[in-house]
Length: 141
Image 1 (spheres, rainbow, N blue to C red):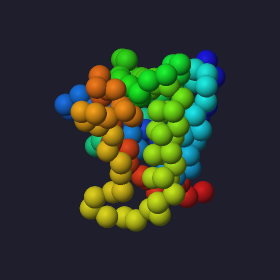
Image 2: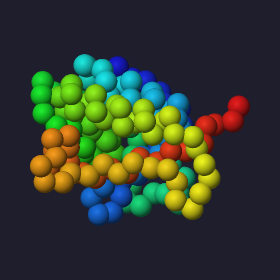
Image 3: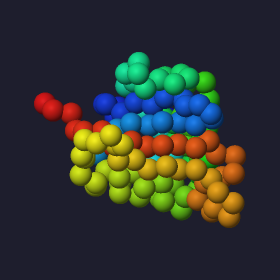
Image 4: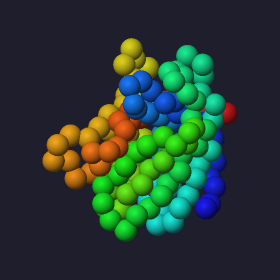
């Protein structure tokens, strides 16, 4: 398994049965690259601010490619696991890229993408946890 540090993204297990992932455009692009790989990979996440931790702070994202099939998002202890075939992982990577390309604007409702299974969905598995991905401002250097 390869490891890649995404610097500032963080995640929390959310109630009921979901995941909240937060990252800047650069972090989401890095995650998109990781999701696109055809080999197992893992990225360490930053510790989330206490105010966003709902159930449990998540420490890593692990990519587990399969030969085919939809994306399944799950939490294994404090790790977000993303499994799925190449086409579904490509769609997930494009989702991260599209959000990353959106200009950040401070607002009461941050820019985000909701990923949740619905009947007939060929992208997410019916066994998948829901995930909301939030766009954060870029880190200032």
